[in-house]
Length: 308
Image 1 (cartoon, one colour):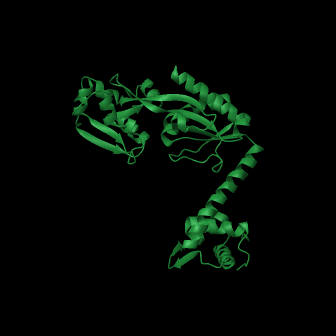
Image 2 (cartoon, one colour):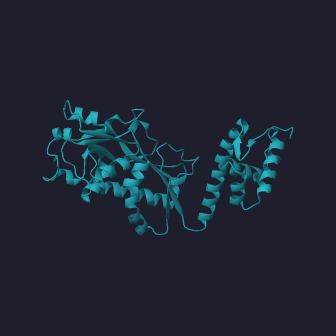
Image 3 (cartoon, one colour):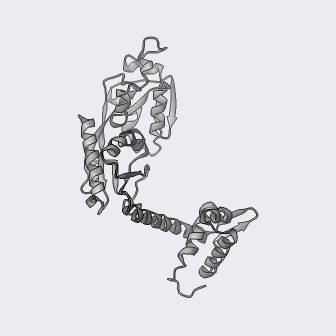
């Protein structure tokens, strides 16, 4: 145990601990690090001796983190990921340049990824890494170059570029509109005979995406559907709509491509407009890199064509 509280343990010890804590297994950590199980065990014991605390509860056929172990793991996991990312970027700097992009999972799956082949065709030398997440990532901390964010103008970062706004309207499988359907959709009141698909929003962060708001905009009252299905992710809900399981609330930039392809149909003219829009922002310093400039330029052009 060191008397100096500021003295840091060696990186090898931290690396062994982070792997063991992540797997909760010395055996799996050893396999990942290409060392023996006894080597990992010795590293953990050395680290515990240096810190003066136990990091694991060693149970029969089980390994659990102590309170101190949990605290160290949170820090070690972040440090190791940042080191991996930095080394990856350094190595890639001598190979193909890379742009790391974050967006929500639904935007990445339904808008960005289907259009990436166009960017790759124009810029085959630039690699793209998608880091989709519904939580807001810290661009500097998480090694992100470009973020596509769905937010209000006031909440924007400096220098953000608007891509497009969003209209909300019902969408369904074209099969539900045909005469042969059990309950063909011709007017909004026909939704009473349909299953309505909902995306869960337990914290009421996006009320404009809910059926209740659309009914209010359309001045429809007493619409009680034949059934209801709930989904935790937007892309899952839209896939259910494509499969004919019910009617979903469509978001214009995300479903427009599916409507053009004939996989979805918009049965009614009425839409509601979100106060939010999609913006692109680059991390501090990243915007000066040529590959980031090219990606943002392509993104703005693609969004402009979409708007037209």
